[in-house]
Amino acid sequence: MPTQGIGKLDEIIHGRLRLGVMTYLSNTEVADFSELAKALDATRGNLSVQLRKLEDAGYIQIEKSFVDRKSLTQARITKTGKIAFANYVKAIGDLLGNQ
Amino acid sequence: MPTQGIGKLDEIIHGRLRLGVMTYLSNTEVADFSELAKALDATRGNLSVQLRKLEDAGYIQIEKSFVDRKSLTQARITKTGKIAFANYVKAIGDLLGNQ
Image 1 (spheres, each protein chain N blue to C red):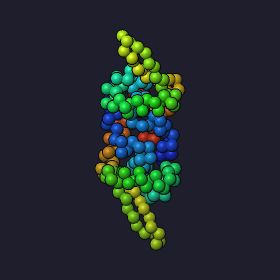
Image 2 (cartoon, rainbow over the protein chains, first blue to last red):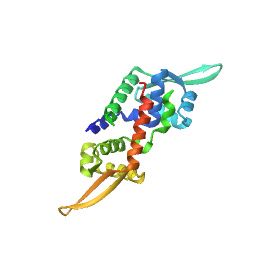
Image 3 (cartoon, rainbow over the protein chains, first blue to last red):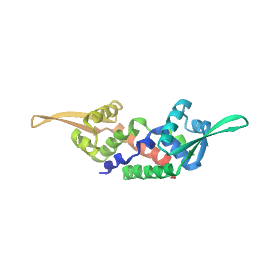
Image 4 (tube, rainbow over the protein chains, first blue to last red):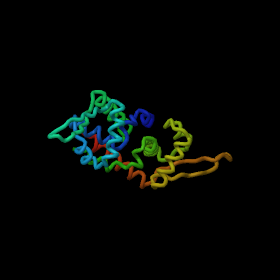
């Protein structure tokens, strides 16, 4: 019975919006805050909270810069984040594999 | 970009322990409370809460009976639950498909 794998699901990645962020960044490497909010149909408040959780886990890093005197916040997936996401994809594949 | 699929992930099934229950019941059809708690390494309190959420959504039904004068609580996946779970597996496959 595959359900023993449920414990291997990284809860930090499994949260729905965080999963969306990690999926997006695993494709784009980096994305700015507004782009993520739009792509994931997320409120800015919720996205900030979820990005902070991913940052605290070391899965992403937040980069702040100024472009044309306007502040720009970007999220970039880290090496640790890529490994954790690959492990997550494998774990959920193992769990749901024979469905 | 597949992340538009994040909205299609059924949050009721996506919760980690609830996902474990649905995965287990999609294989066994029915399981008793202790069996689920053991298989999913869940506390009885948390499992009760999560089973109630799945029951409220109509994805499982809870059956109580007496065996040798001892009460037995079983969870059985419903037709609605099977359809919802199949949709969930497809949605997360679409989301993570090209990883």
